[in-house]
Length: 313
Image: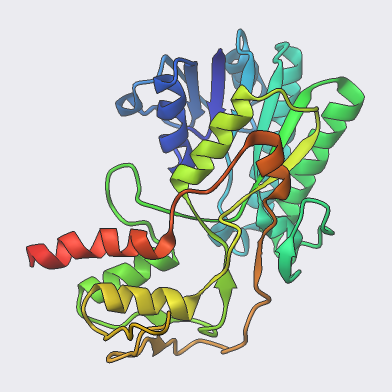
C-alpha cells in the first residue's frame, strides 16, 4: 500500500514510517522538513494547515496515518497553536484524504482525552479532558467520527497512553523516564515533581508500532477507537526506584517489588505533592480486534538502558 505518514519527522513518525517501509509499504513522509535518513519512498514538506500541500501529498495514497501534533508540553504555553495543529490540522488532513480518495485514515490520539478519570479506562469511558492538549485531540477525534459517519471515510483512532523508549538516534528523550535515567547515570537520585504515588500506563514505542502495524493489516469496522497501552500502572516512585536499583544506588530485597532506597529520589522544589488519579488502558477491545498484546516491560527496559552504560564506566 502507498501510505502517507504526517508528522513523519517526529518521535513516533521517525520509528513508524521506516518500519512500514520495511514491511513492504510505499511510504511517503510529510512534515515541515525532510528526513532523508529515514529512507522513505518519498517526502512532501509543508505545514499541517496547508491544504494545497496536503492534497498534493495524499494524491495516490491508499492510507493516511496522521501523527502530526503539537505535543502536550507546549499545549499550556500556546493553546492557540495547539488548536491550530491538533484540531484544524486534523480537519485539513481529513479533507485532503477525502478529496484524494484515500481508503483509510488512522489517527494517533491520546489518553489525555480521558482527563482526570481514574482506574482502568475503556474506549467507552467518558471524555473529559483537563488540558488544552486533551481538548484539541478530543476535537480531532470528533472530526474523524464525523468523516466516518457522514462522508464514508474509513477512520480508526488509536488512543495512546504514556509512550517511552529511545529516540531513533539512540539518545534518551526529555520525558520523565529520560530525566530519571540521566540523573542516576550522573550519580544523582531522580527528582520527582509531584507525588511519588502518581502512576501512569507506560507503553514502549515498539508496542505502539505493533498496534499500528496490526491496524493496517486488519479488516476493522469504520470509526473504531482502540486504546494502546501496557494495561498496567507504574508509579513515579517505582520508576525512580528501578533507576536507582539498576545503577547500583539501592539494595533490592528479594521478597518485595520495591527496592530499599540507599539513595532516595529527591522531591521537586516546585512540587505540590498532590497525587493524580492513576489511569491505565483497558486492552480488551484492541486484543479482540487485533490480537494486540504488549511485549515490553518498563523495569526490564530501565535495566537494559543502564547496565551497559554503568559497566562501561
